[in-house]
Image 1 (cartoon, one colour):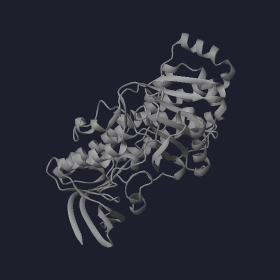
Image 2: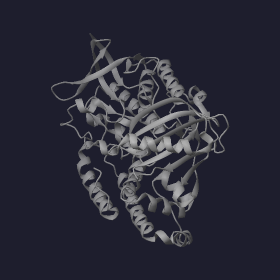
Image 3: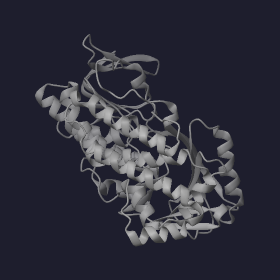
Length: 455
């Protein structure tokens, strides 16, 4: 069986729904192909924290999503450092909400439907089709045992981290980023836990290091009695040992005594810089499938929504001109880099820095740094520190002065990386030269931090 659409989207997550809604509301034929059943669609493992809740693309109006916002009173992060007997209270800039992710998932799906997108559930993509010139022309999938061919002018890859579509596509005649390995990704596992008594920290996102440097725990309050409890860890670590860290911590925290588990789920997410290029002829990758996640916090909902918007708007322009070449789609890359891609690339430098540092030393140093500047660096990719604050920080962190100095040198390199992303090329021809300069900067990062090269 063969079906024809202007645009095929694989994956009914945030980026896929926003891309579909943006294009469908302009009257184009759009289908979202989703592997889950209609009942399970939108059920995704997530920390449930939504940064930037005050500014979402208009394709799916914010008021349609707000019923899924279960806690809008969160205004700071709470970093627990047991070995230092310290708790850091770090403000979170901008509007923040903790959400019911499944309800949110249902609402973005309904938003895409309201815009005119069609949904095909329980449909598993198995291959990508391309013409003799290498342009992507659609996908081949299975639904209830039957093979379905989806033909399209443009394919949107919203299939998530380590997308199968990218394994099945020949990118040899494009600049699409194929420098992708599992070690650049993080596994996440979370449980939704109900407690009888309200927690005291329902206005905070709680973070805590695991016993191993490669992981961290989180406790995000959907409400004062419903907590998203989870952990993230690099994919080169053994998952079950780290899940045991979460379970052990849950058993020892008084607020979770007698708690009941309502849901369990796991997933992978990128903890890397955004793809250098996420376009190829007839093909655009969005959201997790293009590395559109803050590599220091794992937050990706707002970035995914805007990636979907930019991909959708680029698709409309391509349809109007009849040109879905890499060159014609390139502006999508530039808009992503301009909005959040450069910032995430800068934050990735700090992520690299932490891989070369002992977890106890890192936690001790963080406990001595000014909270407002940590917040600034955590969300913007850099921070401005005046002379007086530098002197005070040097005094407070005197037991970690060598590590602070290494962090200072790393910050300077992260700033240079951010500056370089301001010069992201305007078309594919300029990408190799731009990458050469960026890779030289990355060599300096590895030399300074002592970290194992990530790319």
